[in-house]
Amino acid sequence: MTTTLRPAGPERRRPDGFRARAYTVCVNSRPVGSVELSSGDSFGPTVGTIAGLAIDEPDRGRGRGAVAALASEEVLRSWGCTQVKIAVPVEAEHALRLAASLCYTERNRHLRKDIGPVHPLPAGASVRPLSVAEYEPWLARGREKFIESLTGIGVPRAAAEEREAASARSLLPGGPDAPDGVALVGVAHDGADVAALWLRTAEPAWVYAVEVAEAFRGQGHGRTAMLAAENACGGAGARTIGLNVFVANEPAVRLYESLGYRTVVRHLVKPLL
Image (cartoon, rainbow, N blue to C red; front, side, top):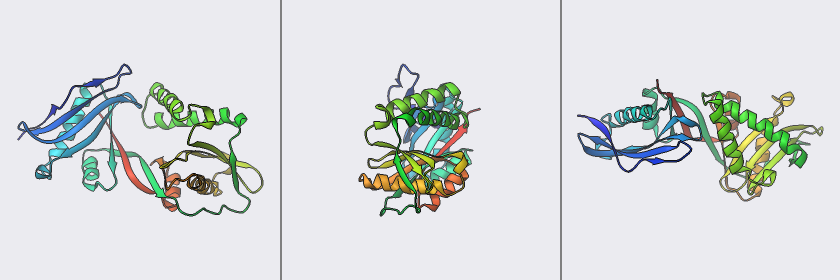
C-alpha cells in the first residue's frame, strides 16, 4: 500500500516568505488522516513545521503516521527547508515515540504550574519595578541573549534578529509600560540588584525572561525571583503561570521542576539533510 499526501486546500503565502498548506493523508487514494505544513515563520524561511498530524482511528498502529511524517519532510525539503520542527503535548506518548524513531531531538519545552498562595521571600529580599533609566540597558541585554539562544540552535543570525525585533514590537509596543506586562528587579537583603524579571501577568501568566546577574548566580536568587514572579502574577489575578526553557540549560530545568513546574509541550527538531 502507498501512503501519500494530497493537497486539501490552496497554498497560503505572505510577502515575508511564509507559506503553508493543509494536506490529506491517503493510502491508495483513500483518506486516512490530515497534516498541516508551513515554513518561513519566526525562525526564518529554512525552518519548516509539521503540525496537526493525525491518523484516523481505524488506520492507527500500521505505520501510517511515520510514513506521513516522512512525506511531510519531503514536501518541506522541496520548499527549501533545512530543518523541521514539531510540537508534541506531553500526554501524546505515541507521538513522542514516533518522533524519537524518526530521529527528532528535543530542543525546548513549555512548562506550567498552578499559582498557589503568596510565597514568603527570604528575609530582606524584595522586588521593585524596573526604572525608565534601566529599561534600555536591560532590553539590550535581553535582546542579545534571545538572539544567542536562537543562533545556538541553528537559526541564522539574520532570522534570529528579525524574530527578536518582531517579538519586541509585539510584546513591548509601549516600552516598559506594555499592557499586562511587568519588568521587575530582584533586590537582595543587602540592597544589591541581583535579578531581572519580565512577565505577562494576565491569565495565563508567562515568564518571558528571568536573569540573575553573573556575580550573584548559584546563591538561590533565581529561585527567589521565580517565587516573586508567581506572587506578582497571582496578585494580578492569574491562576496559572508558564515559561519556555531550552533543555540544554539543565540548571534552569532542575530549578523549574523543583518549584513544581511540569512539562506540557515538548518542541523537537530534526535537520533535513
